[in-house]
Length: 218
Image (cartoon, rainbow, N blue to C red; front, side, top):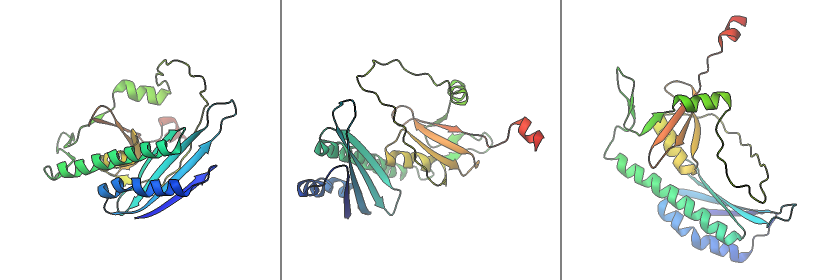
């Protein structure tokens, strides 16, 4: 497996490269089809005297979906260990789901007549959740104020992908996120699957129909 290591604001030493090569053996064991692992180390220094940190981002490229994981710590070697642990867990969970799927070859499917989604623990979002998302009134939990809490907005843009709900859940597990945005092949609606508890998931879909006022204006 080819390995690429780059540093942003920090130099990459020979010792760090050696440690990376030693640590990725776990990933190679879980992802035999992997072709390349990109390792990005970012050093951040804060203006208010907050302790600098190191973020290690891992991107695994193979014949299947891309797998990503990242972790932050004051020591880049610790951040590397945490990121590898995350990616290993994501690959392990994906592997377990594939093995379990052999005993349920049909996978997720819609029952004729009722239209209910069977074969996967995905539940529609509740009315309260849909209303909160639509109105922007998502409740915010009260937490103790931290000494340093900058507002950081990271923007990423991806090409739209059409897939089933089950495929979206699998992709979400591989990238290690709590949600995944996709276009449902069954409805052509932009949708989001999200993790609830354990192996339980939810799905939110957006209607692409124009509001009545806009439809009349056109």
